[in-house]
Length: 524
Image 1 (cartoon, rainbow, N blue to C red):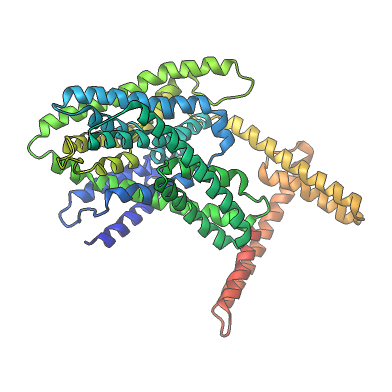
Image 2 (tube, helix red, strand yellow):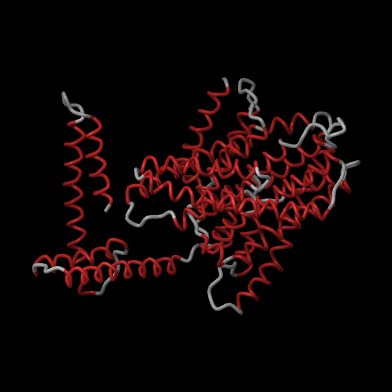
């Protein structure tokens, strides 16, 4: 098996892991990691030959962009306190705790190298957290916080990592310069993200075509990441800023085709890239195994201690942080999504899985320092990092569904239904208001006006079928029957158009264009 065949195996596994995970109630990223581990121990499977410095630039931009599309800037702003406590403060605390313990238990491990280890194991993986949380039907407030934490904690951890590695390589470290670098990195990243987001938004209008616009959304995250890194900013924060800008300002309510096609496209990208990323985590296990040759007992002991520190610090931090957030929340005039009760806090604690970023940072540790000597305890750092990744990702990922079920933490479906109903009512009222404006400007026949009134009501019913009172049940039944008949009519039309594709002299492009119009009409 060569590298290309291995890539196809991972892509196929990414697709199959989704229905298998749904069938057995297991997270697809964890299943892909297990697949990678199985492949790693097979003799005929080659070692992954990807330069470590390319793992983050290749995998993170599309994963981050796909994740941001599911949220909004206003959601982040509303939850800035809990997100800050988790994404920034907790990363600092975990980094320092791991560094202190590692420096103590690993003989000769310098402080700078210990901080690098702490930084690379500190951030829970944004992809694993959102994929697992979304699949388990957790309350929306928990998913929002986990998404916010996962998307922003890499920014803090990666900057800390680079500062620590630079100190270990050069042999010097200045706290003031490190703090300044952290601030400048964030400022540069936000500036790059905003500029590229604004430029991409303008270019979207110029391109016009849905295919070209979606193609641009593939390029923009990579451009944002690379440009920010070239300017010594945070590539992760730049991608987040660009994606949030486009999500906020780059959406045209009437651009139906781009929205439908873009949603489908990014769902496919998210599934495939996530699967490959977590498959690579399992495949890279051979690096950790190779470093432990002849020292299994000692290095497993160190890894076990660091795993305990990482897991314990998250719990020890979450308990007071949740209490503090609740105290602040009590004084707020608007809802802030926070964990409710100890059960949700426990779920948040156990959702702190490490993944793609930690693997990439561990493998990217330089081989040598500026003096030409080997990077201090590089093999030990890589082994401990993989121990943390495997323990948190596999152990916590496999047991999280059981824990969620055991504690009875589920989404507030009634609240979601009420919100959906309110949106349906607002949509129907907006349609009726616009109809009144049209009637005041144009003279509509009475029959057409009545028909449009029914259509305005049907807009709300299509969104929320239970909307309306008892008198409208018949209207809903009539609408359901009409939609069934219309669906059969459109199906017949699609079959006829598709059959024309095989006829002599038929232009496939024209057939596909007509078929696309019918497909869009079928979704309305």
